[in-house]
Image (tube, rainbow, N blue to C red; front, side):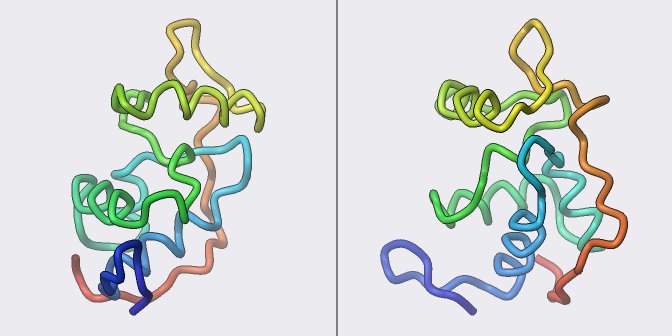
Length: 115
């Protein structure tokens, strides 16, 4: 278990989520549900909560909602990162999942208990 901001200790599930997210290359994304599915358990909501606890220690802009969007408080910051990384986006500002979704074949999957 790793320390988190504020001295909080992360669970093995949170560590597994962050290990998956850390492997997403620049310019590519996964959805919250993709991360849960790759780990074989948990939920999109659980992935989001794990990432929220991590703060800026993770490339959070590389994980988006199933519609390619991000929640309002993060949208502007994510747009900067997506532009910097060349992440394909749609005219409405959401990530173009058809072009940006990462094929995680060969991903080094951590083992973790269900979250």
